[in-house]
Image 1 (cartoon, one colour):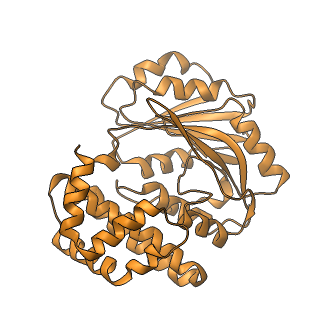
Image 2: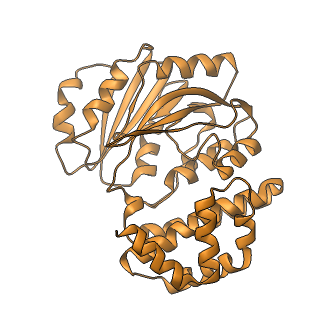
Length: 318
């Protein structure tokens, strides 16, 4: 038994996996295990880390390619720790990350502890900081995610009590927004969620990430998952319905943008999103939490989607 299980999925990350793994091995807190889940990687990722596998704290699980949510799930099912931490293999953590998480979790009797995020870009760095630190209820946490001002929709900036996580928290498939689906499911079961101001996680921005790709099956699944999640949140937390609607409209704009990037369209989804934007654009545009630039995008799309298409392509492909 150990205090913390760190789960790291591996898929075609030969350039980044060593830095990620070493950032865990160099932690000031040492009562942990590392569960590496090889999701059928096609590159030399496993060769890169072979020299570390003699460390008895490290387990390697090999599986056929199953997608990120199920890879995390399979790592979670092998976890022995009282707490679980999911780290993406493109990224890395500060050397006191686990120590800070465990300290705050125990001090505040928290089921989930969330940290702020440093974004590691090629030419500069950026930061995602919560507007408010301290204790959140599930409804407050989900509202903060919807307003994009805290907690955030990512799996990897959170430290979880293993007892609140279930297999069903990890959605099937491989789609845009996998983290959001998992986080929403877990947070609803947490009694105490705690946000700390520490910038513990280094997210490495990838210009070739799936969110930059054109429209395809991953976006179809994303649309269906988002519709499912929105229905659940609307029914369970009616007080935050407007903020949830605004957040989901932003996700739908992302799907429309993907269609524009490769001129590939799902007629049914496009019509449904267009109808929603035209009907509910005021929910987004007059929401005080939404950035001005995004408001202008939604407003333009509501007035004339073809004009928005031309503007988007001019900006994206310049």
